[in-house]
Image (cartoon, rainbow, N blue to C red):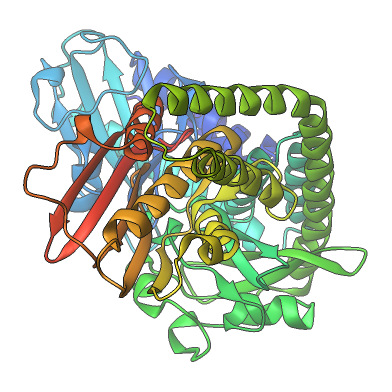
Length: 534
Protein backbone atom coordinates (compact mmCIF):
# COMPACT_ATOMS: atom_id res chain seq x y z
CA UNK A 1 0.00 0.00 0.00
CA UNK A 2 1.56 3.39 -0.96
CA UNK A 3 2.48 5.79 1.82
CA UNK A 4 1.56 8.98 -0.04
CA UNK A 5 -2.23 8.99 -0.20
CA UNK A 6 -4.42 12.01 -0.91
CA UNK A 7 -4.99 12.29 2.84
CA UNK A 8 -1.24 12.59 3.43
CA UNK A 9 -0.92 15.40 0.86
CA UNK A 10 -3.89 17.17 2.44
CA UNK A 11 -2.32 16.88 5.91
CA UNK A 12 0.97 18.41 4.72
CA UNK A 13 -0.85 21.29 3.01
CA UNK A 14 -2.87 21.85 6.18
CA UNK A 15 0.35 22.18 8.19
CA UNK A 16 1.71 24.73 5.71
CA UNK A 17 -1.45 26.81 5.68
CA UNK A 18 -1.90 27.11 9.44
CA UNK A 19 1.73 27.49 10.57
CA UNK A 20 2.70 30.95 11.83
CA UNK A 21 6.40 30.19 12.31
CA UNK A 22 8.98 27.89 10.75
CA UNK A 23 9.58 26.03 14.01
CA UNK A 24 5.87 25.35 14.37
CA UNK A 25 5.67 24.11 10.79
CA UNK A 26 8.70 21.81 11.12
CA UNK A 27 7.44 20.33 14.40
CA UNK A 28 4.08 19.49 12.80
CA UNK A 29 5.77 18.16 9.67
CA UNK A 30 7.88 15.79 11.79
CA UNK A 31 4.69 14.37 13.27
CA UNK A 32 3.16 13.96 9.81
CA UNK A 33 6.33 12.24 8.55
CA UNK A 34 6.29 9.73 11.40
CA UNK A 35 2.62 8.98 10.83
CA UNK A 36 2.86 8.72 7.03
CA UNK A 37 5.98 6.49 7.12
CA UNK A 38 4.64 4.31 9.97
CA UNK A 39 7.98 4.84 11.72
CA UNK A 40 8.64 5.14 15.44
CA UNK A 41 10.46 8.44 15.18
CA UNK A 42 11.13 11.21 12.67
CA UNK A 43 13.60 14.10 12.76
CA UNK A 44 14.18 17.10 10.51
CA UNK A 45 17.72 18.50 10.36
CA UNK A 46 18.54 21.64 8.38
CA UNK A 47 21.97 22.57 6.99
CA UNK A 48 23.68 25.35 8.96
CA UNK A 49 26.13 27.03 6.58
CA UNK A 50 29.30 25.02 6.09
CA UNK A 51 29.33 23.71 9.64
CA UNK A 52 26.85 20.81 9.48
CA UNK A 53 23.27 20.23 10.55
CA UNK A 54 20.93 21.59 13.23
CA UNK A 55 18.08 19.51 14.62
CA UNK A 56 15.02 21.66 13.92
CA UNK A 57 12.24 19.18 14.79
CA UNK A 58 12.01 15.78 16.50
CA UNK A 59 9.08 13.60 17.46
CA UNK A 60 11.06 11.91 20.25
CA UNK A 61 13.02 14.77 21.82
CA UNK A 62 11.29 18.05 20.79
CA UNK A 63 13.14 19.87 23.58
CA UNK A 64 16.40 19.28 21.68
CA UNK A 65 15.16 21.25 18.68
CA UNK A 66 17.55 24.10 17.75
CA UNK A 67 19.98 22.81 20.41
CA UNK A 68 21.49 19.65 18.94
CA UNK A 69 24.10 20.08 16.19
CA UNK A 70 25.96 17.64 13.99
CA UNK A 71 29.34 18.75 12.73
CA UNK A 72 30.25 18.66 9.06
CA UNK A 73 30.17 15.09 7.66
CA UNK A 74 29.22 13.71 11.09
CA UNK A 75 26.78 10.82 11.43
CA UNK A 76 24.66 9.18 8.78
CA UNK A 77 22.80 12.48 8.33
CA UNK A 78 26.06 14.31 7.57
CA UNK A 79 27.02 11.67 5.03
CA UNK A 80 23.61 11.82 3.32
CA UNK A 81 23.87 15.61 3.16
CA UNK A 82 27.42 15.55 1.76
CA UNK A 83 26.65 12.85 -0.84
CA UNK A 84 23.14 14.17 -1.60
CA UNK A 85 22.02 10.54 -1.57
CA UNK A 86 19.60 8.65 0.71
CA UNK A 87 20.79 6.00 3.19
CA UNK A 88 18.73 2.93 4.12
CA UNK A 89 19.89 0.61 6.93
CA UNK A 90 17.36 -2.09 7.68
CA UNK A 91 18.91 -3.67 10.79
CA UNK A 92 21.51 -3.12 13.54
CA UNK A 93 21.87 0.58 12.70
CA UNK A 94 23.65 1.37 15.97
CA UNK A 95 26.46 -0.91 14.86
CA UNK A 96 27.22 1.38 11.94
CA UNK A 97 30.40 3.40 12.70
CA UNK A 98 28.83 6.61 11.35
CA UNK A 99 25.60 6.37 13.35
CA UNK A 100 25.19 9.35 15.72
CA UNK A 101 22.63 8.91 18.50
CA UNK A 102 20.44 11.81 19.60
CA UNK A 103 21.28 12.80 23.23
CA UNK A 104 18.71 11.41 25.65
CA UNK A 105 17.81 8.39 23.50
CA UNK A 106 18.97 5.15 25.23
CA UNK A 107 21.21 2.67 23.39
CA UNK A 108 19.34 -0.04 21.56
CA UNK A 109 16.21 2.06 20.99
CA UNK A 110 16.35 1.77 17.19
CA UNK A 111 17.36 -1.00 14.81
CA UNK A 112 16.64 0.59 11.42
CA UNK A 113 16.86 4.01 9.81
CA UNK A 114 16.24 5.84 6.55
CA UNK A 115 17.98 9.18 5.92
CA UNK A 116 16.53 11.18 3.04
CA UNK A 117 18.09 14.45 1.79
CA UNK A 118 16.02 17.62 1.55
CA UNK A 119 16.78 19.60 -1.60
CA UNK A 120 16.39 23.19 -2.79
CA UNK A 121 15.06 24.26 -6.19
CA UNK A 122 18.44 23.48 -7.80
CA UNK A 123 18.43 19.96 -6.26
CA UNK A 124 21.24 20.92 -3.87
CA UNK A 125 21.01 19.33 -0.40
CA UNK A 126 19.61 21.67 2.25
CA UNK A 127 18.99 19.21 5.08
CA UNK A 128 17.80 15.69 5.83
CA UNK A 129 14.80 13.81 7.20
CA UNK A 130 15.36 10.66 9.28
CA UNK A 131 12.85 7.85 9.77
CA UNK A 132 13.59 5.30 12.53
CA UNK A 133 12.04 2.08 13.74
CA UNK A 134 12.64 0.00 16.84
CA UNK A 135 12.40 -3.14 14.71
CA UNK A 136 14.10 -4.30 11.54
CA UNK A 137 12.78 -2.61 8.38
CA UNK A 138 12.89 -4.23 4.98
CA UNK A 139 13.20 -1.29 2.60
CA UNK A 140 11.57 -2.49 -0.61
CA UNK A 141 12.11 -0.40 -3.76
CA UNK A 142 8.51 0.86 -3.48
CA UNK A 143 9.01 1.88 0.17
CA UNK A 144 12.26 3.64 -0.65
CA UNK A 145 10.51 5.55 -3.42
CA UNK A 146 7.72 6.60 -1.06
CA UNK A 147 10.18 7.81 1.60
CA UNK A 148 11.98 9.86 -1.04
CA UNK A 149 8.64 11.40 -2.01
CA UNK A 150 8.00 12.28 1.64
CA UNK A 151 11.36 14.03 1.66
CA UNK A 152 10.46 15.93 -1.52
CA UNK A 153 7.10 16.90 -0.05
CA UNK A 154 8.83 18.22 3.08
CA UNK A 155 11.27 20.21 0.92
CA UNK A 156 8.36 21.72 -1.00
CA UNK A 157 6.63 22.80 2.22
CA UNK A 158 9.81 24.43 3.54
CA UNK A 159 10.43 26.24 0.24
CA UNK A 160 6.83 27.40 0.08
CA UNK A 161 7.07 28.83 3.58
CA UNK A 162 10.33 30.64 2.75
CA UNK A 163 8.94 31.95 -0.53
CA UNK A 164 5.90 33.38 1.23
CA UNK A 165 8.22 35.06 3.73
CA UNK A 166 10.67 36.42 1.18
CA UNK A 167 7.92 37.56 -1.15
CA UNK A 168 7.01 40.27 1.32
CA UNK A 169 4.89 38.48 3.89
CA UNK A 170 4.80 41.53 6.11
CA UNK A 171 2.67 39.75 8.69
CA UNK A 172 5.39 37.12 9.05
CA UNK A 173 7.98 39.82 9.70
CA UNK A 174 5.78 41.37 12.35
CA UNK A 175 5.16 37.93 13.85
CA UNK A 176 8.90 37.25 13.96
CA UNK A 177 9.55 40.67 15.49
CA UNK A 178 6.87 40.13 18.15
CA UNK A 179 8.14 36.66 19.01
CA UNK A 180 11.80 37.68 19.35
CA UNK A 181 10.96 40.83 21.34
CA UNK A 182 8.67 38.96 23.71
CA UNK A 183 11.23 36.22 24.35
CA UNK A 184 14.23 38.44 25.06
CA UNK A 185 12.13 40.71 27.29
CA UNK A 186 11.17 37.72 29.45
CA UNK A 187 14.76 37.06 30.58
CA UNK A 188 16.52 39.01 33.36
CA UNK A 189 19.98 37.67 32.49
CA UNK A 190 22.29 39.57 30.15
CA UNK A 191 24.11 36.58 28.62
CA UNK A 192 20.82 34.77 28.03
CA UNK A 193 19.25 37.87 26.43
CA UNK A 194 22.17 38.22 24.01
CA UNK A 195 22.19 34.54 23.07
CA UNK A 196 18.40 34.46 22.63
CA UNK A 197 18.62 37.59 20.48
CA UNK A 198 21.10 36.12 17.98
CA UNK A 199 19.54 32.64 17.95
CA UNK A 200 15.95 33.76 17.45
CA UNK A 201 16.76 36.58 15.03
CA UNK A 202 18.73 34.17 12.82
CA UNK A 203 15.93 31.60 12.91
CA UNK A 204 12.93 33.87 12.48
CA UNK A 205 14.44 36.19 9.89
CA UNK A 206 16.22 33.38 8.03
CA UNK A 207 19.75 34.74 8.47
CA UNK A 208 22.83 32.59 8.18
CA UNK A 209 24.73 34.30 11.01
CA UNK A 210 23.78 36.88 13.65
CA UNK A 211 26.12 38.52 16.14
CA UNK A 212 25.90 41.08 18.93
CA UNK A 213 28.76 43.32 19.94
CA UNK A 214 28.47 45.48 23.05
CA UNK A 215 30.16 48.84 23.40
CA UNK A 216 33.02 49.18 25.88
CA UNK A 217 32.84 52.95 26.34
CA UNK A 218 36.12 53.20 28.22
CA UNK A 219 38.09 51.54 25.43
CA UNK A 220 35.77 52.78 22.65
CA UNK A 221 35.61 49.22 21.34
CA UNK A 222 32.87 46.86 20.23
CA UNK A 223 33.38 43.48 21.89
CA UNK A 224 31.79 40.31 20.47
CA UNK A 225 29.42 38.96 23.13
CA UNK A 226 27.11 36.52 21.33
CA UNK A 227 26.77 34.64 18.05
CA UNK A 228 24.86 31.58 16.98
CA UNK A 229 27.64 30.62 14.54
CA UNK A 230 29.19 27.35 15.69
CA UNK A 231 32.62 27.89 14.09
CA UNK A 232 35.13 28.63 16.88
CA UNK A 233 37.15 31.12 14.83
CA UNK A 234 34.05 33.32 14.53
CA UNK A 235 33.40 33.20 18.27
CA UNK A 236 36.93 34.51 18.92
CA UNK A 237 36.78 37.51 16.58
CA UNK A 238 38.70 40.46 18.00
CA UNK A 239 37.22 43.65 19.37
CA UNK A 240 36.88 46.48 16.84
CA UNK A 241 37.20 50.21 17.39
CA UNK A 242 34.24 52.57 17.06
CA UNK A 243 34.35 53.83 13.49
CA UNK A 244 36.28 50.77 12.28
CA UNK A 245 34.72 48.25 9.89
CA UNK A 246 30.98 48.17 9.18
CA UNK A 247 29.80 47.57 12.75
CA UNK A 248 32.02 50.39 14.01
CA UNK A 249 30.59 52.77 11.41
CA UNK A 250 27.02 51.83 12.36
CA UNK A 251 27.76 52.86 15.96
CA UNK A 252 29.67 56.00 14.99
CA UNK A 253 26.95 57.15 12.58
CA UNK A 254 24.09 55.75 14.71
CA UNK A 255 22.23 54.27 11.75
CA UNK A 256 21.79 50.90 10.02
CA UNK A 257 24.39 50.14 7.37
CA UNK A 258 23.78 47.60 4.61
CA UNK A 259 26.54 45.87 2.67
CA UNK A 260 25.27 44.15 -0.51
CA UNK A 261 28.20 41.72 -0.57
CA UNK A 262 30.86 41.54 2.16
CA UNK A 263 33.22 39.76 -0.26
CA UNK A 264 33.54 42.97 -2.29
CA UNK A 265 33.56 45.52 0.56
CA UNK A 266 37.00 46.91 1.40
CA UNK A 267 35.94 48.10 4.87
CA UNK A 268 34.75 44.67 5.97
CA UNK A 269 37.09 42.87 8.40
CA UNK A 270 37.37 39.09 8.02
CA UNK A 271 37.02 38.26 4.32
CA UNK A 272 38.59 34.82 4.78
CA UNK A 273 36.10 33.84 7.46
CA UNK A 274 33.20 35.23 5.41
CA UNK A 275 34.34 33.15 2.44
CA UNK A 276 34.63 30.05 4.61
CA UNK A 277 31.11 30.47 6.05
CA UNK A 278 29.48 31.55 2.81
CA UNK A 279 28.46 35.02 4.02
CA UNK A 280 27.24 37.51 1.42
CA UNK A 281 24.93 40.40 2.38
CA UNK A 282 25.09 42.11 5.76
CA UNK A 283 23.17 44.64 7.81
CA UNK A 284 24.49 46.27 10.98
CA UNK A 285 21.88 47.88 13.23
CA UNK A 286 22.95 49.91 16.29
CA UNK A 287 21.35 48.97 19.62
CA UNK A 288 20.25 52.32 21.02
CA UNK A 289 18.40 53.57 24.06
CA UNK A 290 17.42 57.23 24.11
CA UNK A 291 19.78 57.84 21.15
CA UNK A 292 22.68 56.34 23.10
CA UNK A 293 24.32 53.34 21.46
CA UNK A 294 25.08 50.32 23.66
CA UNK A 295 26.01 47.84 20.93
CA UNK A 296 25.33 46.62 17.43
CA UNK A 297 23.37 43.73 15.91
CA UNK A 298 24.93 42.32 12.73
CA UNK A 299 22.98 39.96 10.46
CA UNK A 300 24.37 38.03 7.49
CA UNK A 301 22.69 36.14 4.67
CA UNK A 302 24.02 33.26 2.61
CA UNK A 303 23.09 34.92 -0.67
CA UNK A 304 22.85 38.48 -2.00
CA UNK A 305 19.90 40.09 -0.23
CA UNK A 306 18.40 43.58 -0.60
CA UNK A 307 16.95 44.05 2.94
CA UNK A 308 13.60 45.72 2.06
CA UNK A 309 12.32 48.68 4.07
CA UNK A 310 9.92 46.69 6.23
CA UNK A 311 12.72 44.28 7.18
CA UNK A 312 15.06 47.14 8.14
CA UNK A 313 12.27 48.76 10.14
CA UNK A 314 11.58 45.50 11.97
CA UNK A 315 15.28 45.09 12.83
CA UNK A 316 15.51 48.72 14.06
CA UNK A 317 12.51 48.16 16.33
CA UNK A 318 14.00 44.90 17.56
CA UNK A 319 17.35 46.60 18.22
CA UNK A 320 15.70 49.29 20.37
CA UNK A 321 13.81 46.70 22.40
CA UNK A 322 16.97 44.60 22.77
CA UNK A 323 18.90 47.66 23.99
CA UNK A 324 16.24 48.30 26.60
CA UNK A 325 16.34 44.65 27.73
CA UNK A 326 20.15 44.81 27.94
CA UNK A 327 20.09 47.96 30.08
CA UNK A 328 17.37 46.50 32.29
CA UNK A 329 19.43 43.32 32.76
CA UNK A 330 22.47 45.38 33.73
CA UNK A 331 20.44 47.24 36.35
CA UNK A 332 19.15 43.94 37.72
CA UNK A 333 22.69 42.55 37.85
CA UNK A 334 23.86 45.67 39.66
CA UNK A 335 21.03 45.33 42.17
CA UNK A 336 21.85 41.66 42.70
CA UNK A 337 25.52 42.46 43.17
CA UNK A 338 24.68 45.08 45.76
CA UNK A 339 22.60 42.51 47.67
CA UNK A 340 25.45 40.00 47.53
CA UNK A 341 28.24 42.47 48.25
CA UNK A 342 28.36 41.65 51.95
CA UNK A 343 28.80 37.98 51.04
CA UNK A 344 31.65 38.76 48.64
CA UNK A 345 33.37 41.06 51.11
CA UNK A 346 33.14 38.33 53.75
CA UNK A 347 34.66 35.78 51.37
CA UNK A 348 37.44 38.16 50.36
CA UNK A 349 38.28 38.98 53.97
CA UNK A 350 38.41 35.26 54.74
CA UNK A 351 40.77 34.82 51.78
CA UNK A 352 43.01 37.62 53.04
CA UNK A 353 42.99 36.07 56.51
CA UNK A 354 44.00 32.70 55.04
CA UNK A 355 46.87 34.31 53.13
CA UNK A 356 48.07 36.08 56.27
CA UNK A 357 48.02 32.79 58.20
CA UNK A 358 50.17 31.28 55.44
CA UNK A 359 52.58 34.19 55.80
CA UNK A 360 52.79 33.65 59.57
CA UNK A 361 53.52 29.94 59.15
CA UNK A 362 56.03 30.53 56.39
CA UNK A 363 58.18 32.91 58.42
CA UNK A 364 60.39 34.02 55.52
CA UNK A 365 60.17 37.76 56.12
CA UNK A 366 63.13 39.76 57.36
CA UNK A 367 61.01 42.62 58.68
CA UNK A 368 57.44 43.52 59.57
CA UNK A 369 57.44 46.12 56.76
CA UNK A 370 58.22 43.43 54.17
CA UNK A 371 55.36 41.23 55.41
CA UNK A 372 52.91 44.14 55.42
CA UNK A 373 53.90 45.16 51.88
CA UNK A 374 53.20 41.63 50.62
CA UNK A 375 49.83 41.60 52.39
CA UNK A 376 48.99 45.04 50.99
CA UNK A 377 49.80 43.88 47.42
CA UNK A 378 47.45 40.90 47.79
CA UNK A 379 44.63 43.04 49.13
CA UNK A 380 45.11 45.50 46.23
CA UNK A 381 44.93 42.60 43.74
CA UNK A 382 41.51 41.65 45.10
CA UNK A 383 40.50 45.31 45.14
CA UNK A 384 41.42 45.64 41.45
CA UNK A 385 38.80 43.06 40.48
CA UNK A 386 36.00 44.85 42.32
CA UNK A 387 37.11 48.20 40.93
CA UNK A 388 36.79 46.76 37.42
CA UNK A 389 33.28 45.45 38.09
CA UNK A 390 31.84 48.94 37.91
CA UNK A 391 33.58 49.61 34.58
CA UNK A 392 33.03 46.37 32.67
CA UNK A 393 30.11 43.94 32.66
CA UNK A 394 29.12 44.08 36.32
CA UNK A 395 29.45 40.31 36.79
CA UNK A 396 32.40 39.46 34.49
CA UNK A 397 35.93 40.85 34.28
CA UNK A 398 38.49 40.51 31.48
CA UNK A 399 41.76 38.78 32.42
CA UNK A 400 43.81 41.16 30.26
CA UNK A 401 42.21 44.12 32.01
CA UNK A 402 43.15 42.63 35.39
CA UNK A 403 46.73 42.29 34.21
CA UNK A 404 46.84 45.84 32.85
CA UNK A 405 45.35 47.20 36.08
CA UNK A 406 47.89 45.36 38.25
CA UNK A 407 50.75 46.56 36.06
CA UNK A 408 49.50 50.15 36.17
CA UNK A 409 48.95 50.23 39.94
CA UNK A 410 51.92 48.21 41.11
CA UNK A 411 54.76 48.58 38.62
CA UNK A 412 56.11 51.72 40.29
CA UNK A 413 56.24 50.04 43.70
CA UNK A 414 57.57 46.70 42.42
CA UNK A 415 60.64 47.81 40.50
CA UNK A 416 63.73 48.91 42.41
CA UNK A 417 65.71 51.97 41.31
CA UNK A 418 68.23 51.08 38.61
CA UNK A 419 66.09 48.26 37.21
CA UNK A 420 64.60 48.73 33.71
CA UNK A 421 61.80 46.21 33.26
CA UNK A 422 59.18 46.48 30.52
CA UNK A 423 55.73 44.89 31.02
CA UNK A 424 53.51 43.71 28.16
CA UNK A 425 49.96 42.29 28.47
CA UNK A 426 48.58 40.50 25.40
CA UNK A 427 46.36 37.66 24.17
CA UNK A 428 42.68 36.78 23.93
CA UNK A 429 39.78 38.79 25.41
CA UNK A 430 38.85 36.21 28.06
CA UNK A 431 36.28 37.18 30.70
CA UNK A 432 35.77 35.43 34.06
CA UNK A 433 33.10 35.54 36.72
CA UNK A 434 33.90 37.36 39.95
CA UNK A 435 35.12 34.31 41.88
CA UNK A 436 37.55 33.14 39.22
CA UNK A 437 38.63 36.71 38.44
CA UNK A 438 39.58 37.28 42.09
CA UNK A 439 41.64 34.10 42.18
CA UNK A 440 43.39 34.99 38.91
CA UNK A 441 44.12 38.50 40.20
CA UNK A 442 45.94 36.94 43.14
CA UNK A 443 47.73 34.53 40.79
CA UNK A 444 48.90 37.37 38.54
CA UNK A 445 49.97 39.45 41.52
CA UNK A 446 52.13 36.64 42.92
CA UNK A 447 53.66 35.78 39.54
CA UNK A 448 54.48 39.43 38.83
CA UNK A 449 56.07 39.79 42.26
CA UNK A 450 58.06 36.60 41.76
CA UNK A 451 59.21 37.64 38.27
CA UNK A 452 60.49 41.01 39.51
CA UNK A 453 62.04 39.80 42.77
CA UNK A 454 63.65 36.59 41.55
CA UNK A 455 63.78 36.96 37.76
CA UNK A 456 65.61 40.29 38.04
CA UNK A 457 67.55 39.80 41.24
CA UNK A 458 70.84 39.98 39.34
CA UNK A 459 69.68 41.13 35.89
CA UNK A 460 68.96 44.86 35.66
CA UNK A 461 67.09 45.05 32.34
CA UNK A 462 64.52 42.91 30.58
CA UNK A 463 60.86 42.18 29.88
CA UNK A 464 57.90 40.53 31.59
CA UNK A 465 55.14 39.26 29.30
CA UNK A 466 51.62 38.41 30.53
CA UNK A 467 49.77 36.34 27.91
CA UNK A 468 46.18 35.07 27.96
CA UNK A 469 44.72 32.42 25.64
CA UNK A 470 41.49 30.43 25.52
CA UNK A 471 40.97 27.24 23.54
CA UNK A 472 37.67 25.32 23.79
CA UNK A 473 36.92 26.70 27.25
CA UNK A 474 40.41 26.09 28.72
CA UNK A 475 42.21 29.28 29.73
CA UNK A 476 46.01 29.42 29.64
CA UNK A 477 47.83 32.20 31.49
CA UNK A 478 51.56 32.72 31.09
CA UNK A 479 53.85 35.14 32.96
CA UNK A 480 57.31 34.99 31.37
CA UNK A 481 60.50 36.95 31.98
CA UNK A 482 63.90 36.98 30.28
CA UNK A 483 65.86 37.76 33.44
CA UNK A 484 67.62 35.27 35.73
CA UNK A 485 66.98 31.61 34.93
CA UNK A 486 65.60 29.09 37.40
CA UNK A 487 68.31 27.07 39.17
CA UNK A 488 68.84 23.52 37.90
CA UNK A 489 67.68 22.07 41.22
CA UNK A 490 64.46 24.11 41.35
CA UNK A 491 61.67 22.26 43.21
CA UNK A 492 58.20 23.81 43.26
CA UNK A 493 57.30 21.99 46.48
CA UNK A 494 60.16 23.85 48.18
CA UNK A 495 59.42 27.19 46.50
CA UNK A 496 58.73 30.52 48.17
CA UNK A 497 55.36 31.46 49.67
CA UNK A 498 54.17 33.34 46.57
CA UNK A 499 54.62 30.34 44.28
CA UNK A 500 52.97 28.05 46.83
CA UNK A 501 49.99 30.43 46.87
CA UNK A 502 49.83 30.26 43.06
CA UNK A 503 49.93 26.45 43.20
CA UNK A 504 47.11 26.37 45.77
CA UNK A 505 44.98 28.82 43.79
CA UNK A 506 45.52 26.82 40.58
CA UNK A 507 44.28 23.71 42.39
CA UNK A 508 41.27 25.66 43.69
CA UNK A 509 40.48 26.48 40.05
CA UNK A 510 40.73 22.75 39.24
CA UNK A 511 43.72 23.70 37.14
CA UNK A 512 47.47 23.20 37.14
CA UNK A 513 50.60 25.31 37.58
CA UNK A 514 54.15 24.80 36.40
CA UNK A 515 57.31 26.90 36.26
CA UNK A 516 60.16 26.16 33.87
CA UNK A 517 62.97 27.59 31.72
CA UNK A 518 62.02 27.77 28.02
CA UNK A 519 64.35 29.19 25.35
CA UNK A 520 66.02 31.63 27.70
CA UNK A 521 62.78 32.70 29.42
CA UNK A 522 61.44 31.73 32.83
CA UNK A 523 57.82 30.81 32.11
CA UNK A 524 55.07 30.42 34.72
CA UNK A 525 51.99 28.70 33.28
CA UNK A 526 48.54 28.33 34.85
CA UNK A 527 45.81 26.41 33.01
CA UNK A 528 42.19 26.02 34.12
CA UNK A 529 38.66 25.66 32.74
CA UNK A 530 36.64 28.86 32.53
CA UNK A 531 33.45 28.53 34.59
CA UNK A 532 30.39 28.14 32.33
CA UNK A 533 32.40 27.04 29.24
CA UNK A 534 31.29 24.05 27.25
